[in-house]
Length: 322
Image (cartoon, rainbow, N blue to C red; front, side):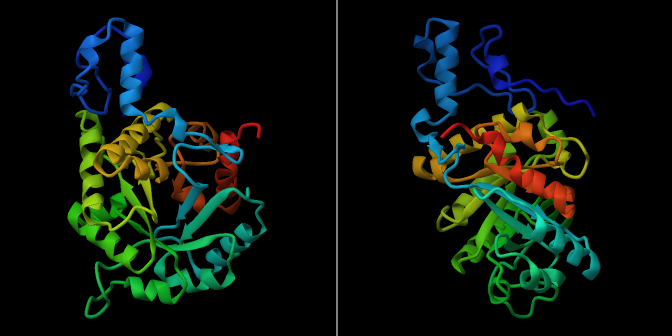
């Protein structure tokens, strides 16, 4: 599966065109009403860059870490349907003994069965998330877990919109938006996942798919204050194939710009957008260097305590002299 990796900058520095091509993103003209007034290639690039990005004034250094989103670097570990009592105990022990950078929000999402076990044994330095919650108040919904139950055992986060829920379980955009909204109404924070299939990327529909998924969340959630967006290209989840730093950065920039245009500049500047998709200890540092990558949602590598700690500590790639 050959993926064409071409950065936005390299596309724009090529031959002049009124409709720049975004390899694997979206083959459509940018709506730049003022672009006709730009006389040089350099000024055109500057105009597009300012169109896609928020002003540089929002990208200051908070402490010694520079990010596009406000707040701390964020790393979540999604354990999915993995683990036994013994392996969970070992993983918790490894995490408890790990040395983690202080300026990172760290969350792990064990299987439902082990949530209470992890909550009672894991260091308070790491918060607990659930991998799913029901769309409303609990009741006669066999096999479901309610947000009220998650609050009761001490969960503070929940994941919604993961591709395995979308494409295997069959949850649609509207349903996922309502689930996220209900969780937020009970003061559970939400990791809201978006991302395209391989055929959607190859068809140039990456932006369209991600924006549609974003709209479903935006139409439902009462506030973005407790939402982290996780961009996870489906073709990179569990496949060993990871989006290049440039591919991930391009989508993160576009999603942030979507928030600016469709929600508010304030939300766009404060919301953390993290990357997921075969993130591991070897590639996390290069990904973390990208300005609009505010952290990671980690799958398989989160089951290995030392490697997960390495990913958490990749925040050092963002640090600049104080």
